[in-house]
Image 1 (tube, rainbow, N blue to C red):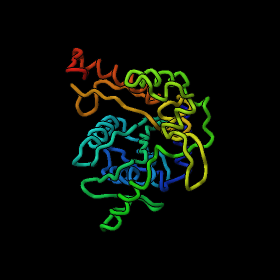
Image 2: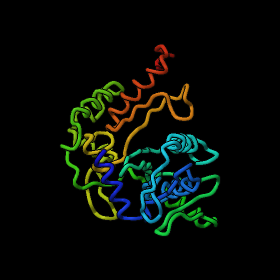
Image 3: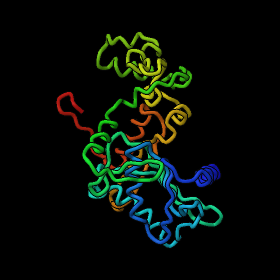
Image 4: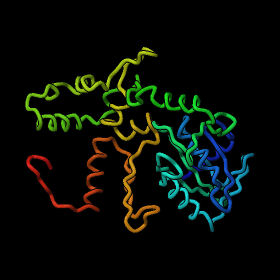
Length: 279
């Protein structure tokens, strides 16, 4: 928690900007927070700090309303009438000098988002509503400009990956095709064959891609290339506004798959069913 507090203090010292926004939000959740969240999703992402004034003074969130603000945020971010498409956000509550501050991390989204039907973007001066069709068209084009999973990280090496997972891949492909070429390939050759090692045509850099890190990377590797990457498994049965259970998964996608299946089986204990040869 000390690390989180230091990070927030550094953001406050840095002041508001294209990726940082302060909201006092002392007694109730200010609705303008959703404009900022929408703008962050549509631009580079950022952090919203509730309980901090525009000048960086820590006001603190009223503790009597803190849980209600968290509940409202979670509920409204899951409401397509408010944020479309919906988006789950990670929040932290930290105590700084005896005052509660809510930190909301908003990643850059791969999709354009609207708040109550209006699109927002972000610049150094704050949030601004996109009021003409050309600006909205540019937003959609920017989101479709490339595939983030192909981003090249030239300093990634084979020791940054969980090498035992390559044997898992070989066993999986062997089940569907006994002569699959990956069976006799080296780990490096599998990554090249899967186009997880590429040359960036803009920079000329060659290396393993974000996709390689997410599929095979060690936890430290993923944390270094995509610090806020995680998969949230939520179960809503009784508490439909928040959740009854949650698995916060931060490992690579190969291991995430097993974790997610276990979570699903926990709450959907359906018997094994086979129709023809399809599970």
